[in-house]
Every structure is written in C-alpha cells, then in structure tokens.
Image 1: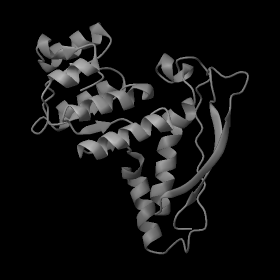
Image 2: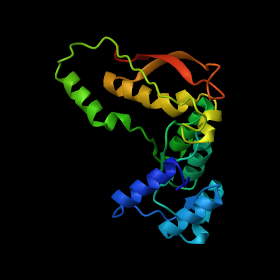
Image 3: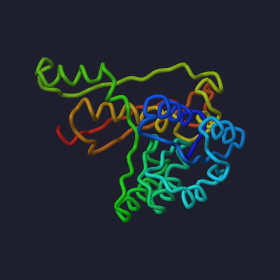
Length: 222
C-alpha cells in the first residue's frame, strides 16, 4: 500500500474492516514516518516492510497488487514502479496530474500486461443507479444533454482537508470534477469524445490555482 493517511487511511480502514478475509496489507510506504509507524503497528507490518520511498517498497514487497492513494503528482511514478515490479495497480483518482504522466501509465500497463485500475465511486451510489434504471426504462425519453453542478464552501484554507489540495494546480478539476465527469459519462451511457472548458480563481479564494471551472463534454453516442 502506497499512502497511509487521509484517503489512504480510509482505504486501509475499509480493506481491514470489510475485506479482512480477502485482503492482507503486507507492505506500506509513506513519507510521514509517524504515519508509517502508527499504521504499521496497527496492521502488524514488520519494520522491514515499511518504507518512506515507494520505489524501494515496490522493489522489495512481493504482493498480489498495489494500492495507491497519494497526491496526484505521484500517481504515475508510483503506478509505474509497481507495474514494473510485477504488481497490478488500483489507484485513487485522477489518473495523473498531466497527460504525459497518464500516457506513461497506459504505456507501462500495455508493456507489462498488468491491469491499472482507477477508482471512481460516484456511479455506484444508489441515486445514480436509480437514475440509470429510470433512463433505461425510457421514462426520461431520449436524452439530449445532461447538466451537472458542484458547489462546496472551501473558502477557508484547509477546509478541504489537506494543504496540498489548496496549493496544487487545477484543484477543482483533479480533486473534484474527475468524479463528476465520470458520473456524467456513466449517466449518458457514452464515452467522452471531446472535452473543452476553462477555469478561474476568485480573488477571495483560499486556493493558489483554479478553484472554479466550466467544462463541456461531447459524448460518442451523441
């Protein structure tokens, strides 16, 4: 497991609480040594299987798969390290922080023949599943377009949980909108053919980069 706190901590809790009969975390990497020690002790991971460098972890731990839940700029190098060391990957969204980094992940997955799955959970929520049922029953008629809006009060610094979310580039797009874009993809029944849009950052924002945005997708099913 690469990552031990925040979202990664949630993964670990869910794995050990709900799937203890199927999943055992045998290695852990985190740059925060306090987190590494605390989670390692809780999970019963030996000190030899705790790492502050994910490259070392991937080269040393022999696992059935690697879970990755770290800030977006580390997704690609961590996933590539895992796949190059023979491990399939399940990674937190977004795919990566740049298009080139995402392409590198795809290339490595194709080269190694190993799956690299990206977590998206909105489509599995009960209300989204109900919308799909209503759509498939024809009760909405033929879909022409779908509009989604996301708004949340993150004006205060750290209100979105971690410093890096307020300091990173494209915080809304990478940490929020990827959920909504995938949700719209699911509801439409198609895949995105073209994505256009722009972002901006109000002067009173607690974010260093775009915290607002307007995006439009053209789907391949019309």
